[in-house]
Image 1 (cartoon, rainbow, N blue to C red):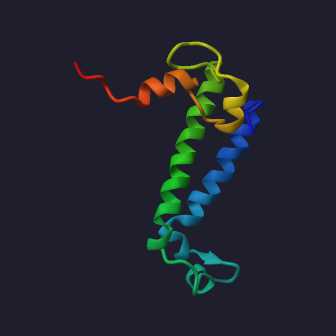
Image 2 (tube, rainbow, N blue to C red):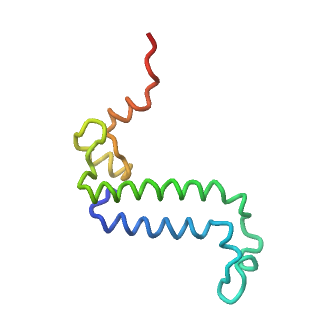
Image 3 (cartoon, helix red, strand yellow):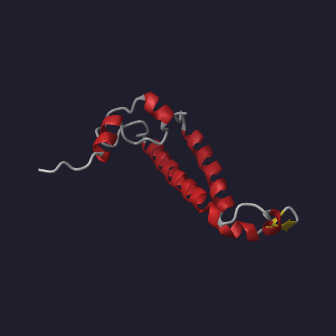
Length: 114
């Protein structure tokens, strides 16, 4: 899904923020539906087991915030490396892409040795 407008990015940030908040260790100490979250989470995945999920969600949130900044600047879909348009198919696969395929390959290529 390529972001067609700013509101889609804002909605994705809101959803991702909710995920991040639900994975925070202190979330299990807050009241939840008349019982403590700890009681609610009894038998659920431990906080330590949630660390990879939390890290992934925080990374996604950071990417989405960068996309929101690109929308605000009018640069979403423009490669930050070469300034050319990022193909729509790439944005459909990776909606947070800030580089075209060629620039991404250059970025990931090991420095050539002489």
